Image: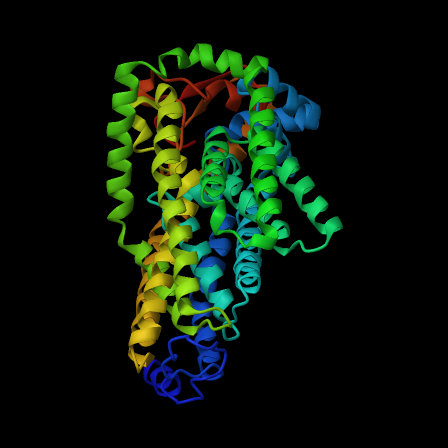
Length: 496
């Protein structure tokens, strides 16, 4: 396949196409032939399909034990009341939890496939929109390749894929929010008429408010990103500069509004008291947060699978073409990469600061918290790869070997992701069989009127189970008791 790709990529064509006077002549590269490179997108898509199939082994754990009985007994009103008055004030979080928890265990299992497809579709639409707005074109299949690689890396490149992709309670709070923010950018970029621009601003306001009521960390990332966009707004096209500035301002204002509603909620106040949030801005906490963020940054930078984002960016940079000069494209992507880098450093540290009082030193090992800015990191790497690809496009007469190398890197990353998913699938299957066995026994005992049931811990991927730390940590044992409608849960040494 690599030899075939290299052969068709080196086929000469008219280098004067899509050039303006004064542009650097493009090297010989065909536009029709690289469409076959779109077949490479089947690899990350296969990773997503395999991961979605493994979702059949998902079983409740951690916070799920507390959500399921509330939704079962009280529905959406009870869930909203629990979040707003008792947990953390995240009303939109309550709605999303209700949307899958109302289906019980089936909702737990279907959440990952549905959310995975949603992320892929939105990333695909975003890539296509960016190319269209930039007056750029890419061979068929390349936008899907970029979107599918970004999706696969975001969902499965994390050190803890289970909490990122399979655990709905973490996904709705830390995985989906940045994707929703990207989705709001699509109508903004596509708006041309006055009515479309008004609708786009409305979507931005609604999305910003919902983000504020869904995830504090994602709200920080998006707010910092929009602020950086305002600071570099001179790079926006003159005809759209005022509109894009208005969208940035509307997004920041709506996020602040959502966060204000959340911050003043009884649930958020109780959470701040429980987690001693007042220590957030102390010298020791700020210094520890900086140290923690440095550790997180090192671990993310040394995760070699993210090379797939650079590789797919190089492929995109080599293959996209359009009327813009290479200099204009370089400046555009350089500004985008610079803004993304600033946003990553600033928002990443702030996210660590606001989560440190809750997690302490475990903020480094709680990898699901990274997802709020991890998507931006992957997009940043794609921009870097695109810049490299554009540079090679100008200087390399034969782009076939470079494209073949990028294809090999993408394939290797996909193989590595599948290998990690295979190991996780085995652990998930084992836990699912044990969980089903214990569940049947506990349901039968509860139906017989037994009010105190033993429960065997079934941990997976650092999921919270009761009786941790030698049995001292009881949570969520009371929620498990509510799930089975019994009074107490005790620790069991073996499965029934």
